Amino acid sequence: MNFRKEHTIYTAIWAMLYASPVVNIYTRMAGNPRITFSWGEIFHAWAFTSIWLVMFAIHNFLLLPILLKKRKTGTYLCLSVAILLAGTFINYMGRPKHRHIDETRMEAEWKADSLAYERVAAVRLGDGRYCSPQNPMRRKPLDYQPIDPLPMLGPGELVAFFGGLLLMGMNLGVKLYFMSQRDRERQKIIDQRNLEQQMEYLKYQVNPHFFMNTLNNIHALVDIDPERAKTTIVELSKMMRHILYEGSKKLIPLTREVEFLNLYVQLMRLRYTRKVHINVDVPPQLPELKLPPLMLIIFVENAFKHGISYREESFIDIKLRVENKRLLFSCCNSKPTQVQRTNEKGGMGLQNVRQRLGLLYDDDYTLDISDGEKTYEVKLDIPMQTRLPDAEVETADVSKQ
Image (cartoon, one colour):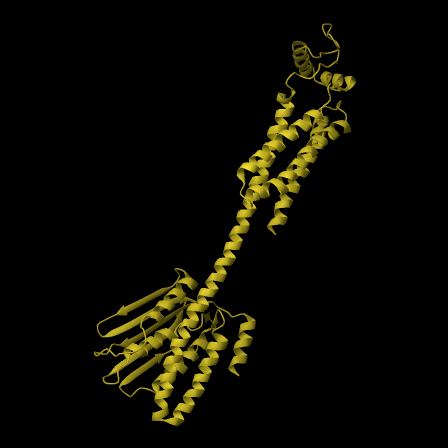
């Protein structure tokens, strides 16, 4: 796409350069009706422009890759100067030794404007090269002197040299602009892929931790109540299906995440005694919003791991509500007086979630963690989207079956 835009700009510039002689002569004809259209003048201007068109193509397709890809600045500068001098020399060689000016045409143009005629005549008399045919002091009417001793320093050559320099500078500027555009687009794609890979890594780093806890729960139930253990295995299969099918998506319905959360809480209820009070406060009707999968489970899992005691009264209070298209989630748990020893390293799950939140929402989220003397509370505030794509809704319906 950028390649097409770049060459569209070049085509437009050269089209204007080729059209400028025609526009110029028509402008002069509009201001002076005695001036006639001359194809010779236009062809001469086009020949001059074509020289620099060839030089421009050499600079664009041969010299710029030397600078921008091979990074050979010295070689590029030497060849660019050589191209400029070559174009100037070709322009000089293409110029005739004498100025072929139509006597009738020049006289008509001079006489068309008396003031201009007098001014030009005075200049020509002073210069001595040619003068008005009405001036008796002219030496050679409309005759032309040989070329100056230093032709390469003439005004025509200087215009050709600096005009070519301007074209090359324009070419380099446009090329650098579109290269920077391509680099930004490429870097954006790389950053997006890195973000997705990092998100997948953080998400699936949580899953083994979760399954280890769940399998430990089932192991405990096998000895206590085998029938309930069978039911728990079914519940676990539902949670595994959620992780396999829903966890691979970028966003899932809020209702799906809440169902998964309730399955986990139900499984955990089977493990603990009546001394543990678990309260889940979720509205019966949830709006059709979506959020990243496995975003809330880590907080609940952390509460069960560090906030439950078999020896004393303990509680876990989970609340969830939606306000102004934002999810407000809180999880508060008691802190046992005797710290339980576990073989698992703590703090990694919350650290992973914080990294995920930073990658997903940048600064548009709030995660407050209050570590009190007797309670530990986590509050999360994240934005949510209003509707799901049709494809994801259909997938969600299939996974329910």
